[in-house]
Length: 311
Image 1 (tube, rainbow, N blue to C red):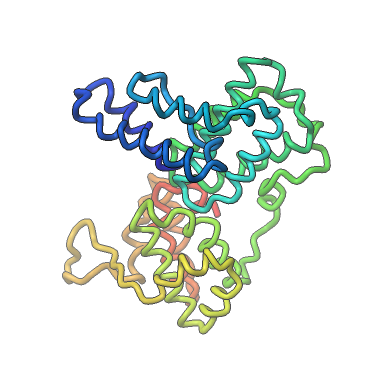
Image 2: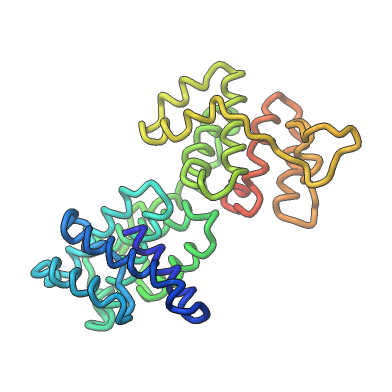
């Protein structure tokens, strides 16, 4: 579903300006992938994105409709529950993006059939939906377009009476009011690795560099193995290669000495008070203990990631 969604998005961008002959292979690949999914992975067909009504994709649409069969008549609640489970199980951003688009398609279809259907949802399912979308927003801080799509989905859901969620935990809002445990530097490092960097590693090299430098700091403190062993297996295996990676932060302009930008100088070079990230860098520059190197390791990843900067 994620690959099909990305290919359809690419075709939508190309279609207005590029001759059909040049993006026809993209549509042929969509047809091929949808057909293979329908034949060999029927359990995933319901999560494929809604396909545009283009004649080139008629075969793919027909295959999806045929494979879905009676499942197309499943209740909206059941389809939404399965879609939320699919979204929560995703670890890669492209898969999360496809899951979000699938939920948006379900909500749009439901509103066409019953404009008040969302308000009539069971409060448990509605809270699950809101929690999943808030979690998506939090984890997608490096992808503004995905956050915008999620915001549009929240808007299409419509107004919901907050009193329906009294006593329910919708995610991070409660935790964000609790002061951070600044004395527990290991817990802070683990939070940055798991919540901010691991989900975003493929989006920017600066995130990979930050993971490398945080793990280097933890190795120096003798706690890297302990922290990695506390993580989920898939997160641990994602981060482990960065114990031995060799990313370097390259200066935008040569320094007078000609040296590479060292960890001790990152804060000074980035602390431009006219930017949000620069203010954070100024604060980091004030840290006098050895923990400063941990905060410095995060600075390249802070650029454009306000959720990490706020943390």
